Amino acid sequence: MKYPPRIMDMVWKFAPASSLARRVPVERWTRWMGWLYGFRVPHGMLPKQELSPDGPANTSIIFELLEETLDVPGDVAECGIFRGETLLPIILFLRQRESHKLVLGFDSFLGFDESVIVDRELGGACDVSKKIGGFGDTSRALVANRLHKWQLNPNVKLVSGFYSKTLDNWADHRFSFVHLDCDLYASYRDCLNFFYVRLSNGGIILLDEYNDPPWPGCNKAVDEFLAENSVSLECFESQNYQKWFIRRCDDNSSDLEL
Image 1 (cartoon, rainbow, N blue to C red):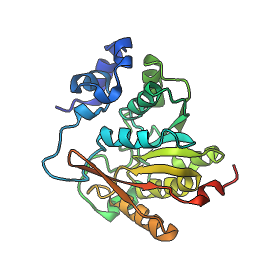
Image 2: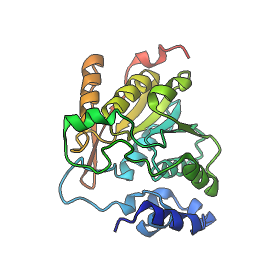
Image 3: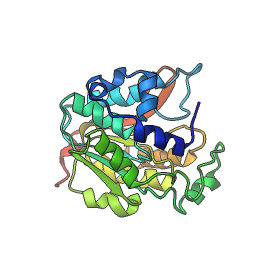
Image 4: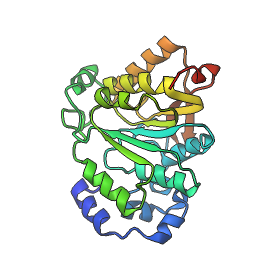
């Protein structure tokens, strides 16, 4: 059952952040633990009956790709963190592996701006959040409080604002893993153009909405980027969840002077 965000706020506020839970590998957390603490975890994702790209990434896919990039130089970023349900598991996964990579969480914390109009015109399946202000039921303070509660603040930066205004402030950074969960055409376009040239060799950009029916703007932005940069996609499948990603595999990733 899916509960309204305000009910979940109360659950997360009063559920103690257990030191025992922090020691249990997050990929082994039970479905109940994930619900109680507001972490999207593999055991909380029910297997699909048929292979499909619909919906959020199975976190087992995120963890597998994070594992592959642990030794790749660079920071980790998530664009579209909303209420932190995947950001916190990503951070805990890294800390449990004694990785001290900087983790950047980008979000407007205001919901969609007027650029969502382009995506509405592109069509796609119905989604109640595809409107101005969609996914706006969050705040930087909410996510910051959750990080503090779990003692995950070190080496984490929450970046507030729209990508067109904030990404360039991090232009001197390299990245090993980027999770794009930003839904819209303009957001994917801006993020791909920014992150790919800063991706270390072997680094990965995971595309959460690619081929997801409500979000054709993602496909439009990704397909344009692939054509312009002679880049190809790889696909990862787990429990009939299907997600696409870009892996940087060339010698040019060291050409950018930072």
